[in-house]
Image (cartoon, rainbow, N blue to C red):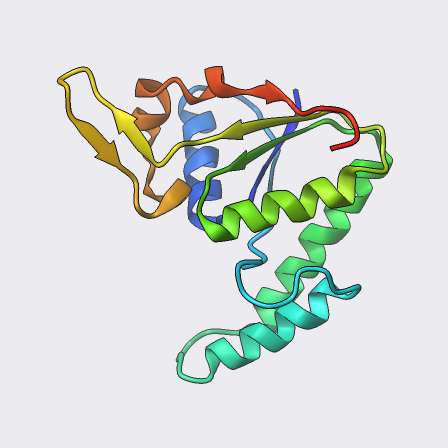
Length: 164
């Protein structure tokens, strides 16, 4: 089974809960890189994220930039281990900037390797059976376990083309 990759901490927690509820063992890699801010083409992504998070945290109490950067380092290192071991990936993303930029960044990282990549692009607007629309403004973090099933999100999984 491919490792699920998400760029949203909240959705990652929801996905973990969803799998536990369904009695499914599944690895999830969270890359909360906030790539919708700053330069994503830089050679040292950790340094640019540290700089961005330092600026962001100036008016935030109880937020540890060191812990957040260490989490990013750990998850990026784990990503490299997974890539080297030939692991396949299933990337969850939306058209929201952080997800989309994360998806583009990860595709760029994976374009030179042979790992199998699948994607689930989750729309942020869903038609419901009662002829109404449900808009998920928060992106993936606005989902619930019930919505994953109601909108059959796993059926949206597609193989990502070679060469990404």
